[in-house]
Length: 623
Image (cartoon, rainbow, N blue to C red; front, side):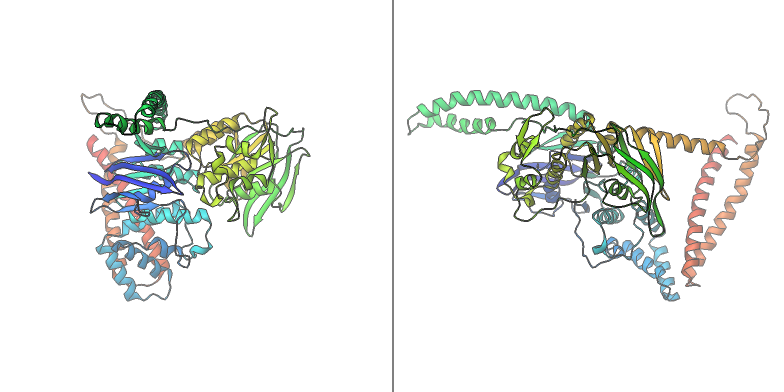
């Protein structure tokens, strides 16, 4: 079933066509990842398809009964609303009911009549299970303070609120722009599982290659205003893209050679051409368009001189840092060595950015010392957006730091030439910074860090908003970088390629120094969980001698006993569940703490009964 169709859509931006006469469609169950270089128009295309921007030409049609959930790069909200009002602002009856219920139980003065009415409506609309799902989504996304106003949230918190709103509304189709930005690694893995189901219909832009491989079943590439689709994963896309570019380059070269001959013919013809030659003139115009197509130009090149590094780099001695009662770092020591490649991981809010700010001297520890070597030159790439004045152009931003740059090979080049290495051609260098895409601004920000010739790179979420091609080149540069590197990133592929050990923020200020990359760490965690499960005390098992029988084996004594106990216990739990539901629906109390206790007990009963029923089915087959 076709959900969305775009026919001959076009969109221009600042006198440049991003795409022209583009056709695209998405059907039920398709999970499409849209890729392309920064500035190619991916975000604009998503906005046009989601109905947030009108196309300059063509039309977008959505099937009548289809609802679309849209997550933009920079979500816009009513600043005065609370998180709760924003998340539950949908038009659905169940959503409205859950919002009213949550408001009611959070206010101690809610009357018994109101609570009883709300609980009856929750029962009628079968909203209890949905409410549990809502709480799970909020918990996984780290949204706890529902009364906080939107205007007080950080950029990352806003993105998570927008994600929660989209997921809770349960639209038929999702359009997501960089959904993994500002999420910690555990949350990304949870989101992968949520979106990779067969009944999910999805169009997304993402640079996270593990996420892309796990979730997407098709890739669409926006390149020079045209859309190319590939049915397969990221590896398949890379292989087929290379073949397509080779064929396109050969076709363009052939068209250019033919055009030279046709151009000579056109020039030799008299001005009043006959009708017999008209077809050839028309063909020439079509040929000229083919010959004018851009072939793959020079790749982004990252190459800068690294300042010489002495024997002493940074010595961290027993540092601690707290904000109020919350411990961020508790008695941490480490002596950085040459060519250290360290990844920093941990949940959002654990203090990773605070730790980086202490290393660079932006924040002071409460106790302990951080002693950098005299030759240590920091290059600090932060999550903060690039700051600029309205009248500043791209080249002005670079010249603020340096007029000339020394490259790794000793060559000295101008700021303008350096910009060209970063895929900012001369025409774009005099563009206002405000006109750049989000990814182009991040690339410019990275350039400003590298222009200082650092020998200790600190990267805080460097992959946000960068396209996959730029990420591959950045990875290659960092692999050959001669200095130290410390980075925070939610991009697992990026981390696995670059880091050799981790600082793991485990909470309460504890930082584990783990030898290995992120995948090594996840495997180690699984092993630890397995060990814990195996060492748990288990009930003694009475061994019974099994008789040899043909076909199915006979049940053991222990299995018979377990089966009998299940048959006694399940009805008891069913009775208790019925009692709880009746008590909650009766509205005999307005004690919200008691209501929450009952709700938790009901949730536990449901889980217990589900496990028991599965075990009962297994045993009944043996019986």
